[in-house]
Image (cartoon, rainbow, N blue to C red):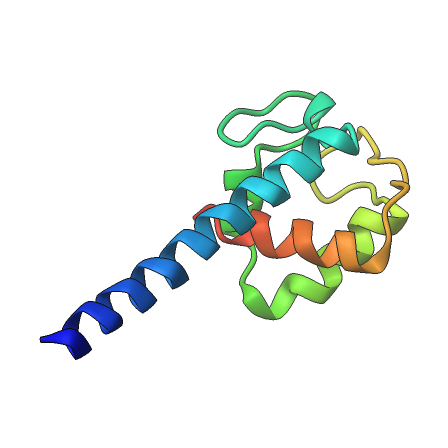
Length: 102
């Protein structure tokens, strides 16, 4: 019986860690002003994060992180995305979070 409780607690810890990481990534996006042009579920200046997540897969994560750092143009229309002042680690966190929004 004790083993079951330990297993359930471990599973709950793993699940809550994922939620905390998602909250951290969303807070990071807000702190870096990403939400000025993007929203999770609606287009603003740039595409919604859910639209980005639906267009790309996990194998595209490095490319998305690179675009977050250096910006891009033409993929989602005529308005370019300027470069962002994020570290490579922050860009990876944001890309992983965006792709998790499917």
